[in-house]
Every structure is written in structure tokens, then in C-alpha cells.
Amino acid sequence: MARASDLLKGVVNVASLPGVYLRLSSVVSDPRSSAADVGRVIAEDPGLTARLLKLVNSAMYGFPSKIETVTHAISIVGTAQLQDLALATSVIRLFAKVPPTMVSMASFWRHSVAVGVTARALAARRREPNVERFFVAGLLHDIGRPIMFLQAPDEVQAAFARAGESGMPLYEAEQAVFGFDHSHVGHALLELWKLPASLRESVQHHHHPERAQRFPAEAAIVHVADQIVNAMHLGTSGEQGVPPLATAAWEAVALPVTVLEDIVAETERHAEAATRVIALDAAA
Amino acid sequence: MDGAAVGPRVQVDVDDLAEGMVLAEDINDQQGRLLMPAGTALTSRHLRAFQLWGIQTVRIRGEGAGPEQDLRDPTPDEVALAEAELRPRFRGDVAHPFTAELLRLCARRLAHHRLHGGPVDG
Image (tube, rainbow over all chains, first blue to last red; front, side):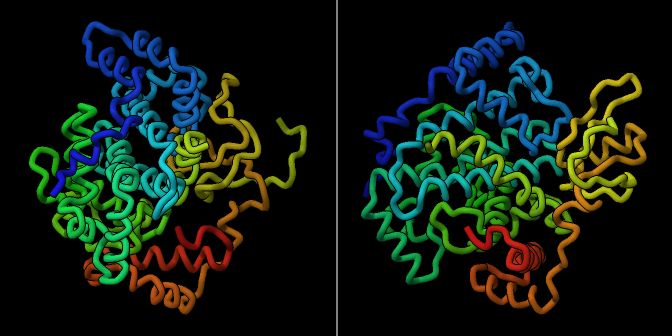
């Protein structure tokens, strides 16, 4: 049986991340570079600049005045955080050409962005230092699915049928049909892109966060965010219900259930706008 | 500041503000610097900022309430109906405190959307 990474072979658009993101990574990780250097790299790409400014000016950030320049955005959001947001908006554009199969890409991104918004809100409650990292982890958690839609539409259809008949979660049906599920494909993609281990682990283990070795909190937060968004039914990545909760993940998140009311309200308020800003113009 | 009328507006005590209300006027500090422009939809962060800045009242667009406030809440029966519809979507143990609370919130949300519009599903 094929391995998850085999599905990546021959998918031309995802072979590598856009050059601007790679240049940005090397500047951010270079201790000699300044915020101005980071700003110059972003400014090379007017589309990226416009998307980043729209994003940091959206209600999710709630800044009292308008942020007009990348330099200003860096000073408020931080370089590492802006790099993560640049990754978020770059990845979506790579997938703009995926044809709709079992779910539309609009619905897929609606779900993915909402999980990002929710993971970010949960991380903020836990006072995590870089909440944008959680936004990206949530955004990318199901990124293996569009690869499967592209590369193995017949098997995907068989998995959907199996989940529909049996009532099992779609990731279990994928496991039965493929011998792996979308989380393994997503992990292989993030590995190909050489993205940080915290992102790779949270994508790989979002259905079984107890298996995460190095970043259990990240995987647990993405799992819980996915639960919340599936329950709210904001878009779908193919899953038709709310899979069982990994109870250890909710314990690892270590927040009282009373926060859920605010988290659901925040997701309701911000997910649509965030989707419009970072996903819809890419799909057009 | 008190000039051009842009529809109904009302002075609201900071303690009575709710998220989602929209500022009818710019808020400036004593030096006249803009702190928050008219048209801002208030979030919890803004409400905390008013406390920090010592602002006591602000002018809000509309009839003194945000869009959510005029709307009646769904009745317990309407929420129960929504909950019965949503319950089969949950594959896990709905008695777990997390899942039980999530189901309760989603049922209330669905009932609210049915009454007042909004996305009823994905």
C-alpha cells in the first residue's frame, strides 16, 4: 500500500512554498537582521503586503487605529508572528486551483480558517506567547485533504461513502481505504516544506493529540478547536459530524468549560471576516 | 463633533456597552489625538480600553443597542428543539462536560439564527 508521502509526488503547485516566504524565513531567523529588513522582504510582494495589512486591520485584532504600513504591523504584531501570517496567506494561494470534488474549497477554507481563529482564541486564553502560530496550525490542520482530493479522487469518494454508511468519522474511513489518513498527508507536506516541528506535530496529531511527543499543547488546542468548529458547522473539510472528543486533549488545554461561551462567540464574530480576508480573494 | 447627524445615536454609559455596538463618533484623548474612529464595532478589548482610559460615556449608533440587543432570545422550547436536531451530529459522549456545554451553546446559536437570520449550517 502507498505511503502518505507518495501522494505528494507530482503535485506541482505544492512542491515548494513561495520564494517570498522562504526569503522571509531566512531574514527572520538571522539574528543580524532588523525589523526594517523583514519589512523590505514583505514589501517586495505587493499582494502579500495588501493581504497582511487587511488581516491585521480586521476585527480579530481589534487595534484602535488603522495600521497603514508593514513597518507599523511588525512593531505591533512582531516579526515571528507576521512571518506566520505570511505563511497562512501564502499556503491558501497554492491551493486556489484545486477543483471542487466532495467539498468545495470555499467550504474547506471556511472550516480551516475558523479552526485557526478558534485555536488562536484558545491559545490567547492560555496566554501562549505567539498566538499566530496557533492560527496557522489550525488553518493547516486538514491541509492533507485537498492533496488527497487532487491525487486520489476515487479513493476519497470511497472513504466518503464508507463514512456515510457506517457513521464513522471520515479520518477513520480514510485509514480503512488508504492505510493512512489526511493528517499523515498533511504532516508529509509540512515536512517537505521544512516547516517547524510544532506545526508539523499539531497537524499530524490533531485527531490523536495524546500521541504528540514534543508539542502536546499545540496538538491538543488544534483538536479542541476542530471540535468546536465542527460543532458550529462552519464550513466543512469533509467531516459531516463532530468526531469523538479526545478527553485528554481537553484536560491538556486546561481551561474551564465556562470559557467556551466566549470562544464560540469570538469564532462567530471573527471567522467570516478572516475567511474573506485571507481565503476568498485567493480562490477568485 | 456634534455636527453631522448620521442616523439615530444615543449616549451610553460605558458599563452598559456590549460587544458589537458601533461607535457613532470618534473618541479622542484630551490632546485631541484619535483613540478610536467612528464606525468601530466594539470588542471586549475596546471595552477594557475604555475602562483604562477612564471614559465614562460614548455615543453609539442605532437605538442605544447593538443589533443583538433588540432581538429576543429563543425560548427554552426552541433551544431544546435545536438541541435535539444537533445531538445526532455528535459522535462522542455528549455527557462529557466539554461536549455537553458545546452542544448547549450550539443549540442556542442555531435557535438564535433561526429566529433572526444567520448561517444555520455549514
